[in-house]
Length: 82
Ligand code: FES
Image (tube, rainbow, N blue to C red; front, side, top):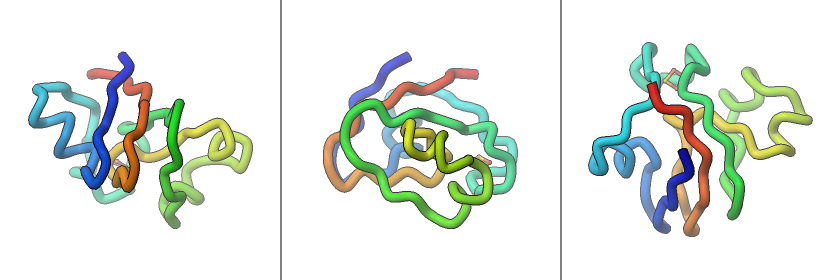
């Protein structure tokens, strides 16, 4: 599923508000990577937890931990619903 996350928004909050659910077994602490998403358009910061879970190639392809994504600008994101 593709979502358009508006600027200045935490992805997880946006998804919950819109009744869209992704896997978050670790509760959004960055410990499971089950919340994987892919940024298709826009730039999302890479944090330390992203670097632990994803290879450089995956990061370059836009993969991020969905629980950690904060959209500073509008983002087009592929999510994997549970
Ligand atoms: S919910 Fe576990 S890493 Fe995101």
